[in-house]
Image (cartoon, rainbow, N blue to C red; front, side):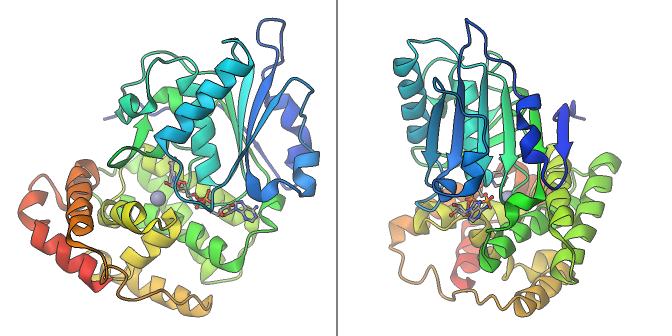
Length: 353
Ligand code: NAD
Ligand code: ZN
């Protein structure tokens, strides 16, 4: 049983962005500025002009196309803020974008009040001090980063989350009109991240009734969006509820394998999950069949033989990464997961992708 923290304040609605100032902690003489971490895809669009950016605020444009956010980037950003503001803390850190930009904002808020490198906090409940107040605004739906206690970062030799109650947003603003510019493919990949979160959570051993209720509903919303013609309010809600379900359960085999792909092939998370999920019929049979139908419906063609040209060292790193995903694998396969998920089995699954 885990203590289940949730984001305490949520503003939901198409067009809600105008009310973002209501969610921010006011600037004071001691904490006189805000830090906005904004996905650089918004650098020149109208959305950024609608943000309550003051003359002393810091706007950090995060390029989420270049790869997964890293501990190095977070450490450098913390250093930049400390230098610019002479160690004074911001009143609020705001993360605006997909899961990557929101995770950078979450990690920054933690690192502004905790010493050392962010690599030291990758793991479960390692953060010592409360973080700076933070607000999340997704402009892409699926990751559930707006709801979760995780800030996923690429570290020195592993992709791993900072998992702490302190890395959870204090408020979020869910405005589905912000999804308008997302491409069909990206919408699908990130949406499938949510779909897969729900499947892994529902079919895992760590599920409880509370997490099941969230995952069940989020899965239905994903089906409405990707099998039917559901709208962006539904997708935004699915992402949030999928994230809530993961807070109180765990991911599974797909996530355990997809981190390796992101590490070695620099695949974005949603895309990597899709490549992996397509070969997991032994674990998530019916859901994989439905996933393939959704691929067809949305005209998404996944690449084949993606690991064929990788050197042996890369394969070894991917195996090691997968074997480190103890919680997801325990959730998916039970305490005895090591007897099934051997290095040979992992290699075989990667070879099929
Ligand atoms: P993302 O943040 O990686 O962004 C994917 C692409 O979409 C980027 O190129 C970005 O610029 C673009 N984009 C974002 N908003 C857009 C918009 N409105 N219009 C057009 N393009 C837009 O994608 P994601 O799927 O939201 O998140 C994946 C990331 O989140 C990964 O880094 C993953 O590790 C992390 N993640 C975190 C959690 C968590 O609980 N913290 C859970 C799952 C995934
Ligand atoms: Zn995910």
